[in-house]
Length: 132
Image (tube, rainbow, N blue to C red; front, side):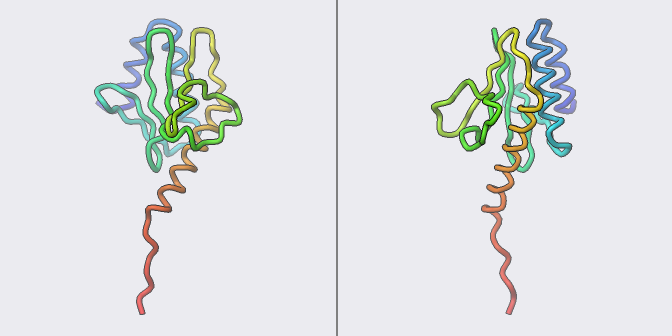
């Protein structure tokens, strides 16, 4: 089964507000860039990647959490991050019952994560040497 199908099944299995919130969050993430890849890792965690890990998400009791791998390095003009704020790497958004997914702000944050991944990727790529 493809990762996207597993994520579909996960969302379908959540029969309260968290399923709708998870679906709206996922839709915004995927709409940020057509080349985002969905993965299913760590025994059942939805993951989104492009040029590196962008975010992971899971429904929890009382919330839906999306955690950005390099969130501490991202600009967050929409002020979405509300969890993990004192860490030096990860930042998260905890959606609670009644919270709405701000799709434009979430898409902008995902694009920030992709841009960060691309700059890291460029730094890791050795410069091509010119032959004499």
